[in-house]
Length: 355
Image 1 (cartoon, one colour):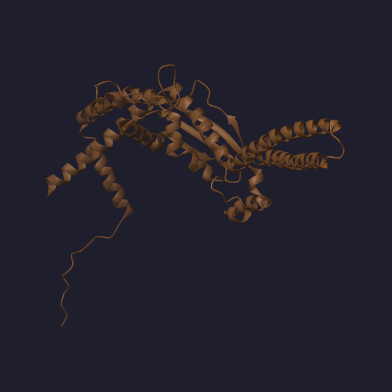
Image 2 (cartoon, rainbow, N blue to C red):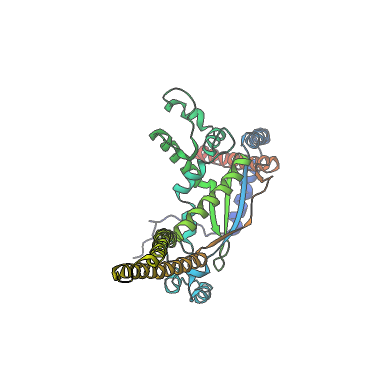
């Protein structure tokens, strides 16, 4: 005995032709509301125009530099460059895996310490970059509620005697800058070129921040890379000066003793021994002084070789690139978005009415 299976309802086969026909039917349905469509387009166009007018323009400062640090790369630099073409990192084998080698330069330049130092440099004769940044981004008015005396919070040069409040507000500015206003990237993984972009609402502020940021980073980078050698040079220089003064004094003493021996009875041999001792001390000091000066000059030569060169290739020049919303983009875009939203709303409403 056979029974008819009525457990599952009948489902029609999928058809692209029917799907396209349904979509055209939806479009014809939406086009029935001509007045509502016209109102939607007018309102959307007005909103697009208002957005282009209200959105404040920004300015982008672009700077390109190259780091020449071939000395620290060692003899395997060519191997590292060859391996880089195949996506391999050979820094550990090439000897250039120091804390300030390769891509670590990018993280160094984005450090909060250097950004803070840059913000505390002068914008003009009366304010710092931090003061101008707070004013341009309307943070000064926002922070008035934190001011103990009700006055605008200022940020002195180099952050001398900063309060806890000033440091907290500087930290907020640094977070805003790192969150899209400042970026550094390597233009090519096989090359040592870096590109820095700073985008801010004030043209001069963007230019100054970009230039000062690289200067602060360059000074810190070179100072850190050569700190050990410079410390050794200072030590040798101080030692050479000290030995030189003692040698000069010993030379005068030996000369005076030699002059005085002419008037002494030859039977007194103790005086001759004293002169010999002074001459011996002078010779020893002279040898020590010579070796110290040799070591000092050798250290200076090594320092010159080990000091990396940061060369600016392209600097940001006024006028900077202006970033603003264009009316011919925002108005059509808002109209298109508005009509799409209206169409979906009309179709959803029609479907709800059929339920």
